[in-house]
Image (tube, rainbow, N blue to C red):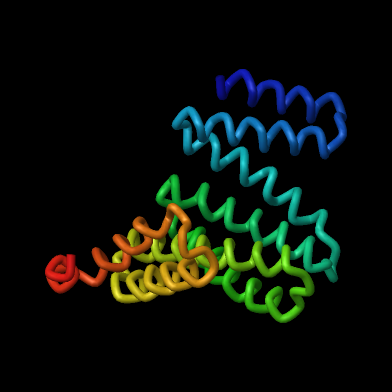
Length: 182
């Protein structure tokens, strides 16, 4: 499947197809590869799409464009994490958290605020994953705790709540006190 889609993308490039069309094929192929467990091919395809897509954002983006770009950056970091490419994921996620703070200062609608809240806990949790994979346990634990509190604040009944709680408890490496409370 990957070979077939990759060949189609090369043919589109050679034929001089619209760059947006080529980029769309890269994205769809990356998603398909990811869903079929071909994570290396998925990341490679998504990187091409990611690079071209970033170039399309204006120098001074609106809040909506900034949010879209932020979600897009998180998606690229997720592809890196699927491939244990933590060296690439960590700076991307750290930069994303700084960008979110800047977007928050400009957020001017309920939709922007809700989107920021959703992305905040996802980025914190992903950076926690990255740091845990890199054996930076204390910092990972702090990020898992932040992710949990960000989620509980934004969406107290979200289905991710037990997962985030588990991550925070497990990474504390002191779960016995929590077990006594249950």
